[in-house]
Image (cartoon, rainbow, N blue to C red; front, side, top):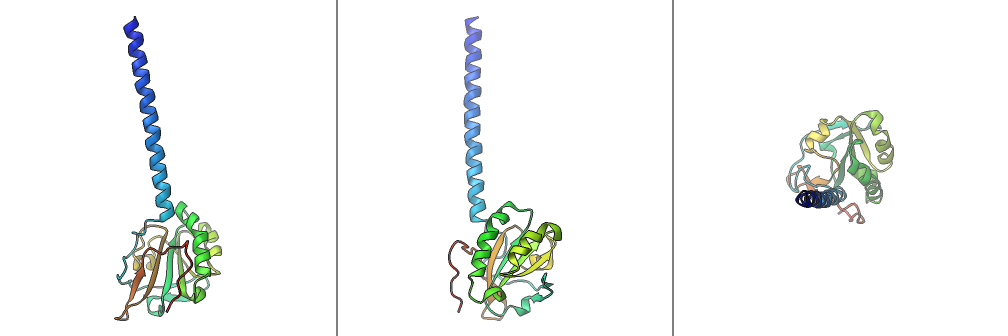
Length: 180
């Protein structure tokens, strides 16, 4: 009988240790996920120097945006209303875009999703950006190779006249840099 009690205590202690270790792993995974959410992946679109594909779309205000119309450095962002990190980054992006030299003419925001779900994003972005509402596999997202949300890029015309990515890791927590 004493061996049975000792065995049960040992199994109970091992189960308790296993539970503590499992909770520790879960906490670390959550911390890591939160860090990735705050930083953004930055790998969901083209890298610096890559060309942007051809696109044309209508903004929610009825204006035409197209690759051919990008003349100066432009901030481009892709959001989805179903994306938790997008909801967290939206206020920072709006503040950053609002302080950008050149104003909303130098900012393009794409919201991928249904019109009903995207309304809060469109309302927040419209004062500081030209906003395109499209499906997840829309023309603008395809041209920019945006495969994850949020994606924030800076693009401009390169030496050969093509629109290329000039920054694929825009720091929204810093003041926008002056554009030449």
